[in-house]
Image (cartoon, rainbow, N blue to C red; front, side, top):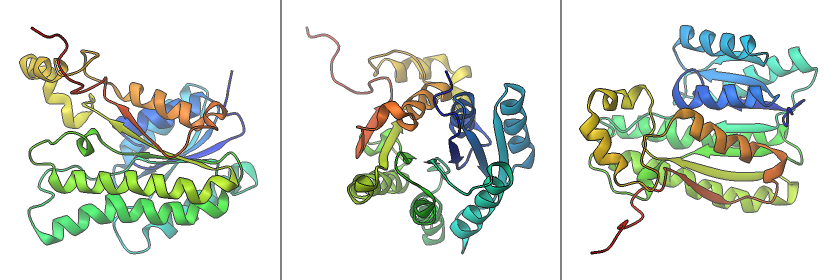
Length: 258
């Protein structure tokens, strides 16, 4: 059953990794998906082609985030694409996934500002521009990170941006709830993306990580996409202002005593 039939969605950072898996899953569930990306034309084309090959509907939108006017340019391009394909600019689902990772994020004031511009400022103003396009049943889903709960060396500034996103979600949910719009944050743990691909070649490191989890395996982008798909669906209408840990249960405590 296509639970998102006739729905429209925007997924930022959707050309690779978790974002691509989310875009593919929402399209498989029936939504017309705007696949946002920043620079990688080939990856975006591959994502759209994969969605269409599976019988879904999608179109790519290129806008680099973190620059002046990014949210306005993105939503203008998305609404133009929606009008062309549906005759309306209604947006039902917004997934803020695009983000810079933590590598070198706190090295200089310029890098710090860039990190917050992409990870915090851009989602804030994308939401601001998207809300007038949403009606009752709208869904806003922000992709956070497990580093807001678990201290990881070298990820201080990055974890600050993701904590801001979670706070945004809780407060925004209270404002838009009367309109029938829900807002939730999904916080992945260690997930097999390009950035974490090195774990495949280092099984001992992977084992050290998975040993800290209740479910002892590395997560996949599809795992995260499945959580997002539920939050985007009609079944999640009573779920809002939540931060959902999608880490396989990381660092819950000792598995046995003695």
